[in-house]
Image (cartoon, helix red, strand yellow):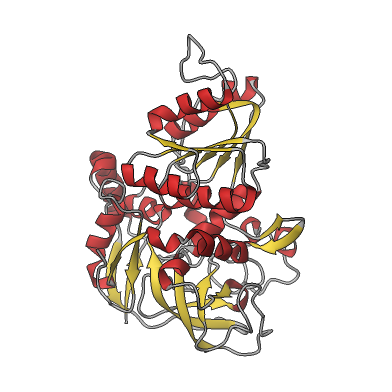
Length: 416
């Protein structure tokens, strides 16, 4: 069985960071300490665990940042090596350790069992780790806030795809996941739709925790997978008065408009669009700083520049939601202090309040994916042995007219 292995290799990691710094954003992605190897399937860690054979596995921006050495050192003690990347996964259950609770999925019908087509909820909380009683966050269903990610009977790891004991989606050998991490895929969703559920769940979590009101103007920075899923979630779950999107590339602006954006413009025109909609003025001394601005800004990029832009176009006492994974950003926070802006993070998923009731994020995400046909954002499929091409395509997705690049573990070849 073949898998892509990410190892703790300091010389190669340092070379990856150097190559990333030299290349900038225009040269694709470095492979870093990544190699294709023959591996055995991971062991089932205990009761309630299942072996899953991936069918499609997405390449995420956080994966690319890890390969390039651009991810924050904050994560160093929250992963275990060597690990198989890949946390955006649709697959088929092949084997169970038994003695689980036979959990019934909220969206699908029946219990997860051998032969079930599932999507993987990658975050590893207290229950999969065998920790009882669970931490306060997990007890409330907020698994993204788990306080025990380095404890329990499996190795440290925020998610499947960053933990050496679970395997990951970039592998024909499969991965293992606890029954609480598996969600049945309805027959009407294609594999392309299903592989979009995990990133859409992240967008759903961000949108429902952004305190967006129906009367609000919302600005979204970035229109890759996460940005477009955010637009879809806003329109499907909240329906704010105005949604404005800053997108670099024409196909991204087209998708954003199709998904419900009132205006999709080049990034350097977003502040102007916000100013016009909110009837604000630009500060004559600081043109990037509006006197008013958007009620909520959702930053799906996570860079120093995008955070500066966000703080410049949010209204006083507004809210900036950081969804794109940041690294070591540097930004002047005087405007945040002076204008009493709330800056909040939005990581992963859990139990959400929607329509007056608590619902699991993945159930809501499947509804958004289905309603908005988000499988159309899958632009290309690659077999695992062509990983160099796949990662290069993902690193240059915007410039090449693509959105989501995935590995096809059934080796159907690249879809153009």
